[in-house]
Image 1 (cartoon, rainbow, N blue to C red):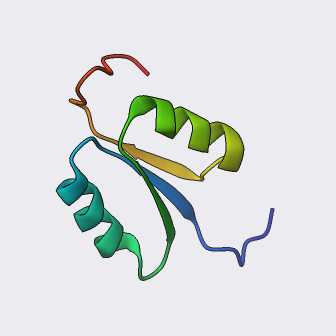
Image 2 (cartoon, helix red, strand yellow):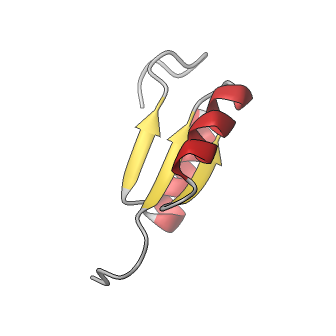
Length: 65
């Protein structure tokens, strides 16, 4: 594990304004990806294996992940 690499965070939220606000807040010290749907999030998790996932609790059409 490379301890010098920045932490990679995936922000999952169906509200673009909320996603962007979180992305802006974290962008200074982290690598931040965004996903607007459950399916997009699952693809990014499988492909890029982020260190942390911030997930909107009430996403439309995604009661279970």
